[in-house]
Image 1 (cartoon, rainbow, N blue to C red):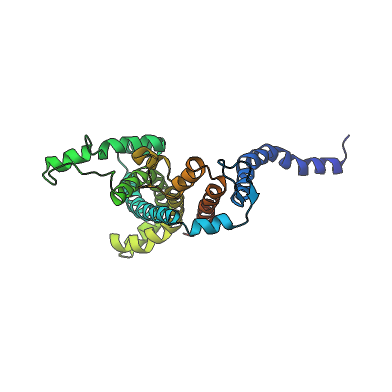
Image 2: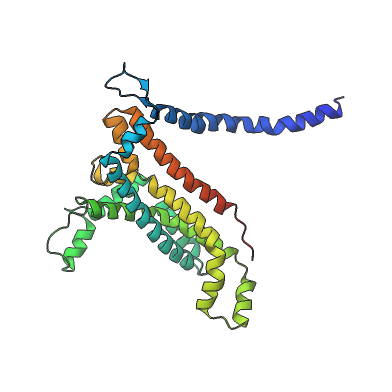
Length: 296
């Protein structure tokens, strides 16, 4: 018969054995690419000069931070981030309030609200490209039909209008997650708190300001952080709307063009790592909000 010591040893080893497949997968798909990307970013590595690969330290980062193309993409990224976070937070909260109303078709409305989230990002971009197309777009037909403009607007040919359209597409895709998070937060608040507030003479405005909003802040934090990461990592929508042009490129498109168009793996990896660090910082805030306890 196995001894007590052997049984204890098996109990200690078993969790690690069960976790080993996931650790292996994470190592191959997550940790190795992160480490490899950082090592590439420290090298001069251009496919146009395959025999001239050498370690240059942080020179790639210094060159990138002095590049006007990088800061152009950075400003575009910040614009998309700001617009997406503001619109998604406001509209997602309003959708959550609407979905919280107990009606007969609430299940159907919830399924419809999730639809943009379920569609692939590139498909979302193509759908909205038809809406904002200068020749046959729905938006131009509406504007011309109501006499707002006399001729079609080139929505996708101007930097800021293109970025605004990209932001709208990403917002449309991000609203369902924000709405679900806010809906979960609203429904987690005990009804007894609202009943006590009404008995004490609280009106709808004061109840919202002093009860609903403070108790939903952790959930809003989760939604805003997740939305921020999504806005930073926009790629498919930009490609679907404007292709690989410089007009609306963000940091991810800049990294792609540097790596695969100019064949500079060193600088492309450096840009990718800067984006990863930015997203990683936001990920820390996401985990902190995720683990934050709400006291009722």
